[in-house]
Image 1 (cartoon, rainbow, N blue to C red):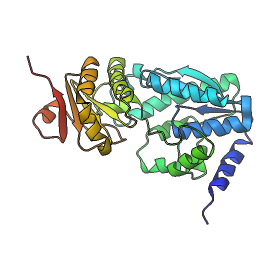
Image 2 (cartoon, rainbow, N blue to C red; image 1 turned 30 degrees about the vertical axis):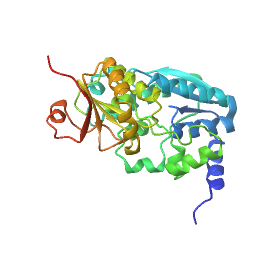
Image 3 (cartoon, one colour; image 1 turned 45 degrees about the horizontal axis):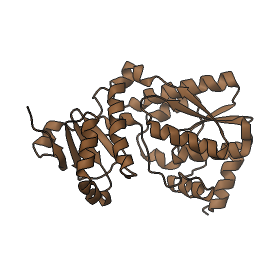
Image 4 (cartoon, rainbow, N blue to C red; image 1 turned 120 degrees about the horizontal axis):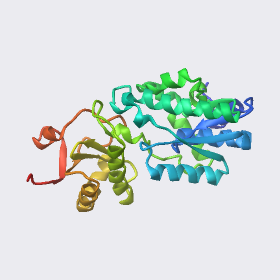
Length: 287
């Protein structure tokens, strides 16, 4: 017999109670926000929300995460991470997330040890098991607990519970790190991540909620839900100017639409030959 929403929330609250203190790996997304909020609700000042800060986290996401923690009255601490300095991460292999999460969880484990927190939690939920998640190995290596996963709570459960608790992020689109915009095998640098962030800020400022700007050298491949394509074409001039100012030479709208996974391999050359389902919002003339 399936549990009601109230029973699921009660189970999550009960899960938190036995811990003397909790540190939550908090990104501002709906999953970690729910864990952070319930930990704060149950443990008050003995619960800490820790945000890993690096070039892969957009400043607008950082500000929003801090604002939510402040609104709830939850203790929040910024933890600098240096995954971009790791050559294994910067090479951008298929298991890039393993190196990112290893860096994050090792820093959080050290904070928990030095500040006396009994356990470190993350926001992994039961729906995440359908994806390839190299970061889960890093979590296991550092003893990270995942209450949403352990209780069998799905992404839909998380959104419903967050809405019931009045969390404004309950319907927030998924937000992967900026490095996910770079095809595997293409090197990652702080400069590239900053370029992507600047480009995506253009879309956010224009009112789009769900988007990705995939980085293919001089080409920016814009992913939006199909229902947003007409508006994107209406705003093609503003998008083009904004993304060119971010440093891209070519700007294309991907007709395949928004996809939350890492960017698949592609190149500006195949796009220019018309072998990809891209609509050019702007193609610069070659000097």
